[in-house]
Every structure is written in structure tokens, then in C-alpha cells.
Amino acid sequence: MAEWQTPKTTWGQSGQTVPIADDFNRIEGNIQYLQDTKETPAGAQAKADAALNSAKQYTDQEVAEVSQALDAHKTAAAPHSGHETPAGAQAKAEAAAGAVQAELDAHLAEKATDEKLGHVAVDGESIIANDAGVIFAHPIIDDTQYKPQIAISTL
Image (cartoon, rainbow, N blue to C red; front, side):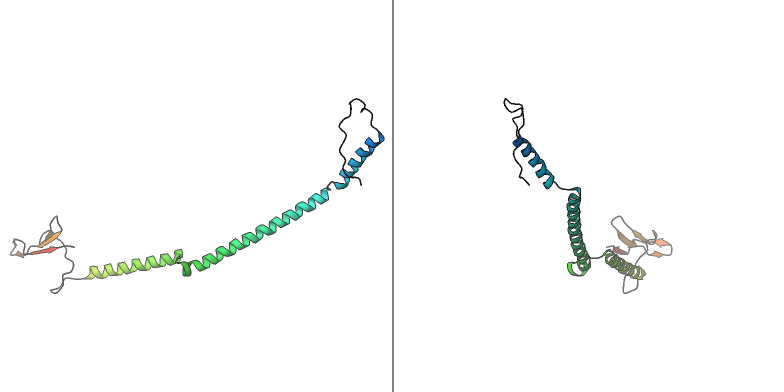
């Protein structure tokens, strides 16, 4: 097999119109060199398949590593980094709401006694409230209203 030789580019010039035996030998040698070194379709396909398999292996490995890291983060996030799952947050919120409701129910159930003031219903007649939120009790004696005797400020 001959190596590639520089092609002749002076054809058609004075004294260069007729090829000689060396010209044909050089042309034939270059053609043979190209045929010997060209890549076959099967060779090209084998290279493409190898590159495809290599790319698939690489991406599969990278995706697996990212997936494992994400799974580990999900598993470790709640106990280690202060993250809370939505279900855990919902349960806490419901428990807090239940505690507030229980306290409100207990507060509303309180009744006024001689020792402790409870809830007073403003009825507009014997018990009234002014614009500042101060509640006044008007004792009614014999169907006659007297001036307020008790003033209670609301909080």
C-alpha cells in the first residue's frame, strides 16, 4: 500500500497535457490508499453503538446517584434538619386548634359567682355597655332604674 501522494495540479498547462506512467501510478496509489483507509458502514455502526452504550451507562449512573441522594435527603430531612412533613405539620396544627378550642370552651363555660366575675350578658336594660366598652349594671328596684352602681371595664 502506497502512502498518499500530492496530486498533480498542473494539468492543461504547457507541456502538462498528457499524463505519463508515473502520473497514473500516483493516481492509482492514492485511490488504493483511500479504499484501504475508508471506514466501512459496519465499522461506523459499531463505533456509534459503542458511543451510545457508553452514554447510556454514564447517564444511568448519574441518575442513580442523584436519585439515591434525593431519597436519602427525603428520609433524613425531617429528623435531622428540622424539616417537617406535611402530615406532621397538619397534625400539629390540628392539635393546637383543638387546645385553643378546649380553652375557649372552658372560658365560655365560666359562670359569675360572688368570688369571681364570669361572663355577663349585656341585655340593654339592667346591664348596658357604653362606646368605650365599659359595662354598667343598673339595679332595678320596684320597676325604677337608679343611676349605675357598678362599672366593669372589659379587657
